Image 1 (tube, rainbow, N blue to C red):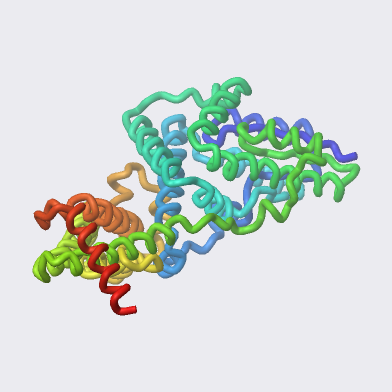
Image 2: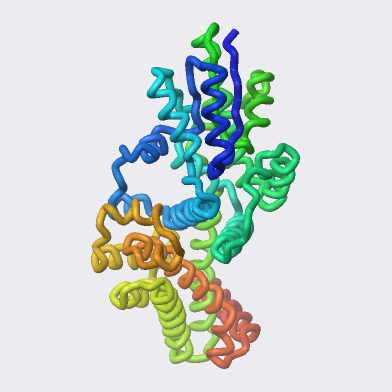
Amino acid sequence: MADLRIVGTAHVSQKSVDEVKAAIDEFRPDVVAIELDPARFNALKKQARDPTVDDVLEVKNFNSLLVQWLLSYLQRKIGVDVGVEPGAEMKLAIAEAESRGIAIALVDRDIRLTLLRFWKSMGLIEKIKMIFALIFSIAEVDKGEEIDIESLKEQNVIDAVMEEFRKFSPNGAHALIDERDAFIAHQLVILKVQRPEGRILAVVGAGHRQGITNYVEHPQTLPPFDALTREPRSFPWAKIFGFAVTGLFAFLLAAIAFSGVGWIVLLYALLFWVIIHGVLAASFTLLAGGHPYSALTCFGVAWMTSLNPLLHAGWFAAYVEAKVRKPPVSDFRKIYETESIREMARIPLFKVVLVAALANLGSLLGTILYFIFVFPLLHIDPVVVISTGVHNMWAWATGWI
């Protein structure tokens, strides 16, 4: 049976770099299995093709891309503070394996699938909590808060951190940690079968070591492999909300029209829908540093996209922003090399994605505020208008039938 050793590392730890080298020297593995997928492997070796702005616009996954960039920035800042490049232990493992002619196995799940499952697994509240926690963490790191990286590799500290993450975001923790533990364990079990007499050294994040070990020692507990590699199918709450908004708006206009308050009030109700959505979507676009043309586009389409669950104002704003800013391909790599959030915000590609995310947020806020304030703005009693309108609609419908 193959001999497997798992080394748990912190991705910004000099001690982890030294431990990986010592493990290769002492264990002399036939295979070095690394917690990377092909995309991250190529990126680490700078062999990957940087996505273009067209790639980003086509995917339209602006929110998760922002989260990915901010997480990367946080990890990079911690690495800079302790003097270690993020992923240095992985780079060393690759370099040592290549120089010694040792086979390399990439055993992690595709990062794009992981992020997709991570983002779609979380509910709205979990996403909001995670974003605020991420912003808070970045602020703390930017203030120069010291972090004891080596303590994060101690099992009792890891257990406490994992438990806190599970309380904070149980669905996110399952997609980001548990599923990847199982995926990596599947790959290691396959390697053990393929090399029954070999020695396999697995280099993984310290937070994954215990979960992977448990699965490898008890492979019968592993979930089916295809369950870990399918694109997630989440309940379409966003579309349901969108169709509900459309239906509620149509009902509101019909109630006003049949209530007898006059066509002027109905026209004002329509006008306020256009203005509130347009102003908020355009304002959030400008808040993101968007071009005035992008803001003007948002103002023009927000009222319409808010009534169509298949469209988003941010998509239009991002397209215009990309045409105006013309982000070069090099922007993608620049985002991963910036030293501050302010510097990142000046990169055209980052602005395109930020504009899309905030424009959508502004439009959503416009929908919420409209239904809260439309009746006070119209100076009418909602109970009287809706009850009278419904009564008159029913009378009209039954009389017509």
